[in-house]
Length: 268
Figure (tube, rainbow, N blue to C red):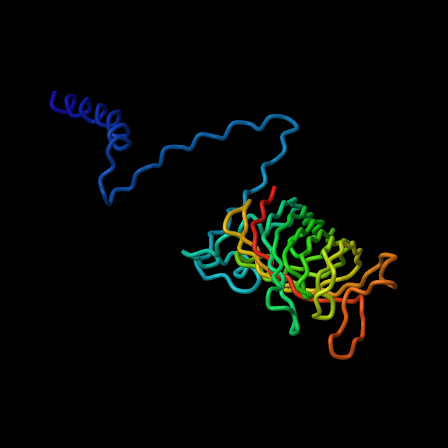
Protein backbone atom coordinates (compact mmCIF):
# COMPACT_ATOMS: atom_id res chain seq x y z
CA UNK A 1 0.00 0.00 0.00
CA UNK A 2 2.82 2.37 0.87
CA UNK A 3 4.63 1.58 -2.38
CA UNK A 4 1.51 2.30 -4.39
CA UNK A 5 1.06 5.75 -2.77
CA UNK A 6 4.73 6.64 -3.39
CA UNK A 7 4.41 5.83 -7.08
CA UNK A 8 1.35 8.13 -7.44
CA UNK A 9 3.18 11.07 -5.79
CA UNK A 10 6.21 10.60 -8.04
CA UNK A 11 4.05 10.66 -11.17
CA UNK A 12 2.32 13.89 -10.16
CA UNK A 13 5.73 15.52 -9.46
CA UNK A 14 7.01 14.63 -12.92
CA UNK A 15 4.01 16.37 -14.47
CA UNK A 16 4.20 19.61 -12.37
CA UNK A 17 8.01 20.18 -12.28
CA UNK A 18 8.46 21.54 -15.91
CA UNK A 19 5.62 24.09 -15.45
CA UNK A 20 7.00 25.38 -12.15
CA UNK A 21 10.49 25.63 -13.59
CA UNK A 22 9.28 27.76 -16.49
CA UNK A 23 7.25 30.06 -14.22
CA UNK A 24 9.90 30.69 -11.63
CA UNK A 25 13.47 29.60 -12.22
CA UNK A 26 15.54 30.11 -9.01
CA UNK A 27 19.03 31.64 -9.26
CA UNK A 28 21.69 29.05 -9.84
CA UNK A 29 19.30 26.53 -11.33
CA UNK A 30 19.58 25.33 -14.89
CA UNK A 31 16.37 26.18 -16.72
CA UNK A 32 15.44 25.55 -20.29
CA UNK A 33 14.88 28.76 -22.31
CA UNK A 34 11.54 29.30 -23.95
CA UNK A 35 11.95 28.43 -27.58
CA UNK A 36 12.06 31.59 -29.77
CA UNK A 37 9.26 32.08 -32.20
CA UNK A 38 10.41 31.92 -35.83
CA UNK A 39 10.25 35.28 -37.76
CA UNK A 40 7.38 35.74 -40.18
CA UNK A 41 8.24 34.86 -43.75
CA UNK A 42 9.29 37.80 -45.98
CA UNK A 43 6.80 38.79 -48.71
CA UNK A 44 7.83 37.94 -52.24
CA UNK A 45 9.93 40.53 -54.19
CA UNK A 46 10.63 42.49 -50.99
CA UNK A 47 13.66 44.80 -51.05
CA UNK A 48 15.81 44.50 -47.96
CA UNK A 49 15.87 47.75 -45.97
CA UNK A 50 19.19 49.57 -45.91
CA UNK A 51 20.58 50.52 -42.54
CA UNK A 52 19.88 54.17 -41.62
CA UNK A 53 22.76 56.52 -40.97
CA UNK A 54 22.40 58.52 -37.82
CA UNK A 55 22.73 62.34 -38.20
CA UNK A 56 25.95 63.70 -36.73
CA UNK A 57 25.54 65.57 -33.50
CA UNK A 58 26.07 69.37 -33.80
CA UNK A 59 29.51 70.48 -32.79
CA UNK A 60 29.79 72.86 -29.87
CA UNK A 61 33.18 74.19 -31.06
CA UNK A 62 33.27 77.89 -32.21
CA UNK A 63 33.14 78.54 -35.95
CA UNK A 64 36.28 79.62 -37.73
CA UNK A 65 37.01 81.09 -41.16
CA UNK A 66 34.54 82.76 -43.60
CA UNK A 67 31.52 81.07 -42.00
CA UNK A 68 32.27 82.75 -38.69
CA UNK A 69 32.61 86.13 -40.42
CA UNK A 70 29.27 85.73 -42.22
CA UNK A 71 27.46 84.99 -38.97
CA UNK A 72 29.03 87.89 -37.08
CA UNK A 73 26.43 90.44 -35.94
CA UNK A 74 27.51 94.11 -36.20
CA UNK A 75 27.37 96.06 -32.96
CA UNK A 76 24.15 97.97 -32.37
CA UNK A 77 24.52 101.74 -32.59
CA UNK A 78 22.32 103.43 -30.02
CA UNK A 79 22.76 106.83 -31.73
CA UNK A 80 22.46 106.35 -35.52
CA UNK A 81 23.22 109.40 -37.68
CA UNK A 82 20.15 111.55 -38.40
CA UNK A 83 18.67 111.42 -41.90
CA UNK A 84 19.59 114.26 -44.26
CA UNK A 85 17.24 117.26 -44.19
CA UNK A 86 14.48 117.14 -46.81
CA UNK A 87 15.91 120.09 -48.76
CA UNK A 88 19.19 118.20 -49.33
CA UNK A 89 17.65 115.32 -51.21
CA UNK A 90 18.25 114.93 -54.91
CA UNK A 91 15.03 116.34 -56.33
CA UNK A 92 14.11 119.27 -58.54
CA UNK A 93 12.78 122.41 -56.84
CA UNK A 94 11.10 125.60 -58.01
CA UNK A 95 11.28 128.79 -55.97
CA UNK A 96 10.27 132.45 -55.90
CA UNK A 97 12.59 135.05 -54.34
CA UNK A 98 11.69 138.54 -53.10
CA UNK A 99 14.41 140.91 -51.95
CA UNK A 100 15.44 144.47 -51.14
CA UNK A 101 18.57 146.00 -52.67
CA UNK A 102 21.01 148.77 -51.77
CA UNK A 103 23.45 150.18 -54.30
CA UNK A 104 27.13 150.63 -53.43
CA UNK A 105 29.15 153.26 -55.34
CA UNK A 106 32.87 153.90 -55.56
CA UNK A 107 34.91 156.88 -54.53
CA UNK A 108 34.12 160.19 -56.21
CA UNK A 109 30.36 159.84 -55.92
CA UNK A 110 28.36 162.90 -54.93
CA UNK A 111 27.50 163.20 -51.25
CA UNK A 112 23.81 162.88 -52.03
CA UNK A 113 24.28 159.68 -54.08
CA UNK A 114 22.09 156.85 -52.84
CA UNK A 115 20.28 154.16 -54.81
CA UNK A 116 17.94 151.52 -53.40
CA UNK A 117 15.02 149.35 -54.40
CA UNK A 118 13.98 145.74 -54.69
CA UNK A 119 13.19 142.91 -57.03
CA UNK A 120 12.13 139.32 -57.45
CA UNK A 121 13.40 136.22 -59.22
CA UNK A 122 12.09 132.85 -60.36
CA UNK A 123 14.43 130.00 -59.46
CA UNK A 124 14.87 126.57 -60.99
CA UNK A 125 16.99 124.24 -58.86
CA UNK A 126 17.32 120.91 -60.71
CA UNK A 127 19.92 119.53 -58.27
CA UNK A 128 20.87 120.63 -54.74
CA UNK A 129 24.22 122.10 -55.85
CA UNK A 130 22.97 124.25 -58.74
CA UNK A 131 20.21 126.78 -59.42
CA UNK A 132 19.27 129.21 -62.17
CA UNK A 133 17.63 132.56 -61.34
CA UNK A 134 15.69 134.75 -63.77
CA UNK A 135 14.74 138.05 -62.13
CA UNK A 136 13.94 141.73 -62.35
CA UNK A 137 15.67 144.53 -60.41
CA UNK A 138 14.16 147.98 -59.76
CA UNK A 139 16.14 150.82 -58.10
CA UNK A 140 15.79 154.56 -57.80
CA UNK A 141 17.45 157.52 -56.12
CA UNK A 142 20.47 159.80 -56.65
CA UNK A 143 23.18 158.34 -58.90
CA UNK A 144 26.95 158.77 -58.93
CA UNK A 145 26.64 162.21 -60.56
CA UNK A 146 23.93 163.34 -58.15
CA UNK A 147 21.18 163.06 -60.80
CA UNK A 148 17.73 161.68 -60.19
CA UNK A 149 17.57 158.20 -61.66
CA UNK A 150 15.20 155.22 -61.97
CA UNK A 151 16.51 151.89 -63.25
CA UNK A 152 15.20 148.49 -64.25
CA UNK A 153 17.16 145.43 -65.33
CA UNK A 154 16.46 141.85 -66.29
CA UNK A 155 19.00 139.61 -64.54
CA UNK A 156 20.04 136.01 -65.19
CA UNK A 157 22.24 134.34 -62.56
CA UNK A 158 23.72 130.86 -62.30
CA UNK A 159 24.14 129.87 -58.63
CA UNK A 160 26.47 127.21 -57.29
CA UNK A 161 25.86 126.00 -53.72
CA UNK A 162 29.07 125.01 -51.96
CA UNK A 163 27.44 122.96 -49.16
CA UNK A 164 23.91 122.07 -50.34
CA UNK A 165 23.38 119.44 -47.59
CA UNK A 166 23.60 121.96 -44.75
CA UNK A 167 20.97 124.18 -43.20
CA UNK A 168 23.08 127.30 -43.84
CA UNK A 169 24.36 127.15 -47.42
CA UNK A 170 27.03 129.34 -49.01
CA UNK A 171 26.90 130.01 -52.74
CA UNK A 172 28.59 131.84 -55.59
CA UNK A 173 26.68 133.49 -58.40
CA UNK A 174 27.44 134.89 -61.82
CA UNK A 175 25.48 136.04 -64.83
CA UNK A 176 24.51 138.94 -67.03
CA UNK A 177 22.02 141.80 -67.01
CA UNK A 178 20.16 143.82 -69.61
CA UNK A 179 18.30 146.97 -68.64
CA UNK A 180 17.77 150.67 -68.88
CA UNK A 181 17.58 153.90 -66.89
CA UNK A 182 15.60 157.12 -67.04
CA UNK A 183 17.72 160.02 -65.79
CA UNK A 184 17.13 163.72 -65.19
CA UNK A 185 20.58 165.11 -65.91
CA UNK A 186 21.19 168.21 -63.73
CA UNK A 187 24.90 167.67 -62.99
CA UNK A 188 27.64 166.57 -65.37
CA UNK A 189 31.25 166.26 -64.30
CA UNK A 190 30.36 167.77 -60.93
CA UNK A 191 29.09 170.96 -62.57
CA UNK A 192 25.40 171.98 -62.48
CA UNK A 193 23.83 172.25 -65.94
CA UNK A 194 20.43 173.00 -67.37
CA UNK A 195 18.39 169.86 -66.54
CA UNK A 196 17.23 167.58 -69.31
CA UNK A 197 15.80 164.07 -69.38
CA UNK A 198 17.64 161.21 -71.02
CA UNK A 199 17.34 157.46 -71.33
CA UNK A 200 20.18 154.95 -71.24
CA UNK A 201 20.30 151.26 -72.16
CA UNK A 202 22.87 148.89 -70.62
CA UNK A 203 24.32 145.41 -71.01
CA UNK A 204 26.70 143.94 -68.44
CA UNK A 205 27.62 141.12 -66.09
CA UNK A 206 27.96 140.44 -62.38
CA UNK A 207 29.72 138.14 -59.90
CA UNK A 208 28.92 137.67 -56.25
CA UNK A 209 28.87 135.65 -53.04
CA UNK A 210 25.95 134.87 -50.79
CA UNK A 211 24.50 132.77 -48.01
CA UNK A 212 21.08 131.11 -47.64
CA UNK A 213 19.55 129.95 -44.37
CA UNK A 214 17.06 127.15 -45.12
CA UNK A 215 15.14 127.30 -41.85
CA UNK A 216 12.20 125.21 -43.17
CA UNK A 217 11.69 122.91 -46.12
CA UNK A 218 9.85 125.61 -48.09
CA UNK A 219 11.40 128.85 -46.78
CA UNK A 220 14.83 130.44 -46.68
CA UNK A 221 16.42 133.79 -45.89
CA UNK A 222 18.89 134.84 -48.58
CA UNK A 223 21.57 137.52 -48.63
CA UNK A 224 24.24 138.25 -51.24
CA UNK A 225 26.63 140.91 -52.44
CA UNK A 226 27.52 141.25 -56.10
CA UNK A 227 29.79 143.48 -58.15
CA UNK A 228 28.68 144.48 -61.62
CA UNK A 229 30.10 146.22 -64.67
CA UNK A 230 28.11 147.43 -67.65
CA UNK A 231 28.25 149.63 -70.71
CA UNK A 232 25.76 151.73 -72.60
CA UNK A 233 24.33 150.26 -75.81
CA UNK A 234 21.89 153.03 -76.79
CA UNK A 235 22.48 155.31 -79.80
CA UNK A 236 22.97 158.50 -77.73
CA UNK A 237 26.15 157.23 -76.08
CA UNK A 238 28.32 158.85 -78.78
CA UNK A 239 26.69 162.30 -78.47
CA UNK A 240 26.03 162.70 -74.73
CA UNK A 241 28.36 160.55 -72.61
CA UNK A 242 27.13 159.51 -69.19
CA UNK A 243 30.24 160.36 -67.16
CA UNK A 244 32.73 163.23 -67.45
CA UNK A 245 35.75 163.44 -65.19
CA UNK A 246 35.79 166.96 -63.64
CA UNK A 247 39.61 167.08 -63.63
CA UNK A 248 40.71 165.39 -66.87
CA UNK A 249 37.42 165.95 -68.71
CA UNK A 250 37.64 162.38 -70.01
CA UNK A 251 34.31 160.76 -70.82
CA UNK A 252 33.07 157.19 -70.53
CA UNK A 253 29.90 155.20 -70.89
CA UNK A 254 31.15 152.25 -68.83
CA UNK A 255 30.16 152.09 -65.18
CA UNK A 256 30.36 149.65 -62.29
CA UNK A 257 29.32 149.27 -58.72
CA UNK A 258 27.95 146.91 -56.15
CA UNK A 259 24.55 145.71 -54.98
CA UNK A 260 23.72 144.29 -51.56
CA UNK A 261 20.51 142.23 -51.44
CA UNK A 262 18.49 140.73 -48.60
CA UNK A 263 15.31 138.72 -49.07
CA UNK A 264 13.32 135.53 -48.68
CA UNK A 265 12.95 132.54 -50.97
CA UNK A 266 9.91 130.25 -51.06
CA UNK A 267 10.50 126.73 -52.42
CA UNK A 268 7.82 124.54 -53.98
